[in-house]
Length: 181
Image 1: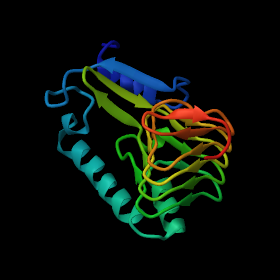
Image 2: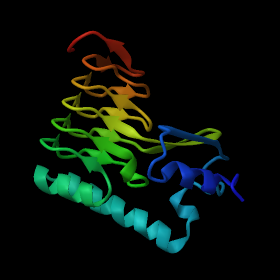
Image 3: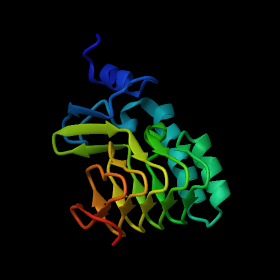
Image 4: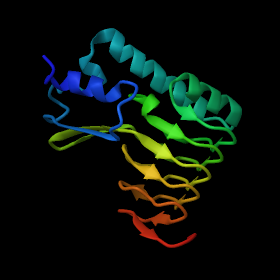
């Protein structure tokens, strides 16, 4: 049945899908939604929990090459010359939806999401950090967001929208301003 929510999500997750954001009505996550990894049986749940544990452990230490290598093996697309500070967090549910281009800096405690539950909706999205952008410490990047080339996301910013190239996002909720903070 092609209209089943998990079938629609699978089509979005398939290679070659050009859409950036998947949205579907869903009940509160306390009810079975069909989207939560815990709805996919024991092995599906263990796979995500193991990936989350490995990501969290490797991101806790200041060994950038090891962090990038493990995240790549886990599905995150990472370019060359990327620096990921200790304490950063990567969504383990759909890591292959996160792309980090060359020369990106990700600050300590920054969080990159590839899915989220809202009160009556499930979302999954391609999160894209373009070449040379700077993500400040403890910034939160929502799923489906693109940070443009050379853009800056200030520390502790909650970003739920795109940032054009060379611009700065600052605050909660983020507002876009000219230049560097």
